[in-house]
Length: 392
Image (cartoon, rainbow, N blue to C red; front, side):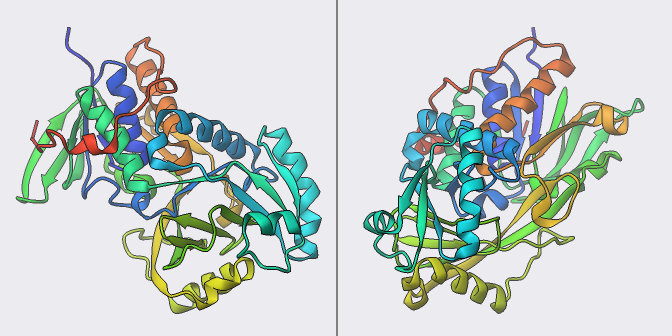
C-alpha cells in the first residue's frame, strides 16, 4: 500500500516539526523551503523558551500552551536549550500594581513562580537595576533557533522525510473540483521549474501564509507583525529578564551565548519580505533594556535584526492572541487538499505540528495518534548527514 504523501511548504519551526510528526505517522513527506532551514522568521527570533508568564494575565490559552510545551521540549531536545530560568522584575509603582494579578494568573496557568525581594533578585543577577523593587522567578529558558529547527528536521529525515531547500513554491496545482493536488516550484540554484503531486499540501509559511493560500483562491487572516531586536556584545545576565507589566516594547532581555538580546517592537506591515529597521527603534530597545540592566547602555551593539510574527485573529497589534490556528480550507474557502498552520510561538512548534497532523489524518481517514511528546530528537548535527538535495 502506498503511503499518503504530504507536501509541506515552509522550512521554519512549524514546517520541520510537522514533517517530523507526519513522518512518524507513516507519511511520505516532502518539505520545500525557498531559502535554507530557518530562512525566515524562525531564524530571527530572540530564542526565548517561554514560561507563559508573559501571557498569563491577558492570554491564558497561550500561557498554558507555552508552559506545557516548555516542559516537553526540555525532555525531547535538551541539547539545544539553556534551562536557565527567568525573572520578572518591578521597577516602579505601575509594575508593583501588576504583581498580584501576575502571581494569581501564573498559578491558574500552572506556571511555577516565586516572589523575591529586591535583595534576593540582585543576588541572583547582580547587574540588574539596583533600584528594582521586587521580582518573580519563572521557568523561562533560551534556545538556539537554528539548532532547534535542525533537530526536528534531522529526526524527520531519519524517518524518510525529504527536505528540499532553496526551492520556491511558485503556484498550487488545483483540479476542476477545487482541490489542491500539488505544487509548482522553482529550484533557485538552477532556475528550473518542476511540479510535485501529493495527497495533501500544508502551508506552514508563517507570515507568508496568506501569499500561499491566495494561490488556491483561499484566505488566511494573518497579520505580519514585525519585531525589532538588538544584540549586545556582553552577557550581563544568566537568566531571561522580563519587565513585570503588561507586554510592551523592549521589555525582554534574553541571554544568548556571550550576548544579551533586547526585544522587541510590534507593528503591522503589508510585505514581510521588506521591513527596514530604523534608528529610533534601535534606540528604543537600548533605552528600555537599560532600564532593567543599566550596564547595557555602555555595552557595544553587536547588531540589530527583525522578525515578522504571523499573528492571527481579531484585534490589532499586541491585543491579538498569540495562540495558533490550523485552517482546513475546505471548510473556510471551499478548497480541498490544503491546510494552513500559522500563529503561535517558537515554543509551541511541537503542539502546532501535532494539531496540524491531526487535521491532515482526519481529512485522509487515517487513525494514527501523535507520539512526538515521547520521542527524543536526534542531534541537530545529524541533519547534515546524507543531506543531498533531490527533486522528486
